[in-house]
Amino acid sequence: MNPYPLHCRIPSQRARGATLVVGMVLLLLMTVLSLTTLKSIKTDERLAGNLQDRNTALQAAESALREAEEFLTGVSPGRFANEKGLYLYTYSGIPAPLELTDDDAITYQGSLTGVAQEPLYTLEQMESGVEKGQSLVLGVRYGGERRATYRITALGFGGSATTRVALQSTYKR
Image (tube, rainbow, N blue to C red):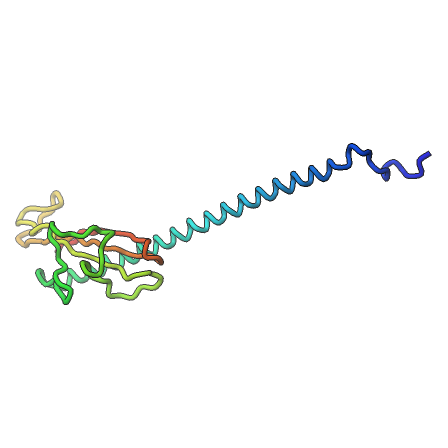
């Protein structure tokens, strides 16, 4: 007669290592699942940071566009020069939007926070104007005055100098 009850007996030799093996496999599966989840979280965090950086660059470029429109509103035609030279481009010599530098563009005069560099913009005269009775928009008559059309190209920077957004706008005056 065995002095120990049935539930307290020691298992046989064959079943002694099975619990350890099953436990190790489950631990390995949980580790792989945890590492995959952490990698996914890290990627999502990077994507969110890049999106925020791009939005900062977009807002900076929009600020430069607004400043250029105010500049065109307040200046008389042909007065686009300052100490750097002529800023009004014609069809030749226009720099590529993402390659604007301080030497060939106007620097934004406002103050922006969180950007690597202040935004830049250029002005390009697209045409001499609209003749009397003609229109750039079908059905609209401008009368006897000529309206010059300008293309404004703005380049905004995000938190890093490699994040760039270029915007263009057309301005008639």
